[in-house]
Image (cartoon, rainbow, N blue to C red; front, top):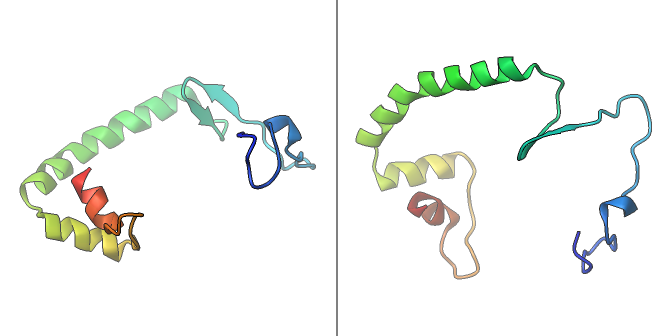
Length: 96
């Protein structure tokens, strides 16, 4: 953590521990951190199936959407506000 943290902590060693048996230790796996004790092969299979199932939906969406539809969906999803320059977040996301 940065030294100028508003909470006053300077490292993760300063963080309070969470007592009790409900605490679950996470396991670091590559760039991601696992929170649940799931079989890695099952997770890979689920991700592959999700990617396969999503491909036709993504293809359809790419040919049947407009910037205004994408902004409307983001607003319906609860995205609001603007950045420091006053540009709405929905515009920033659609441009990305």
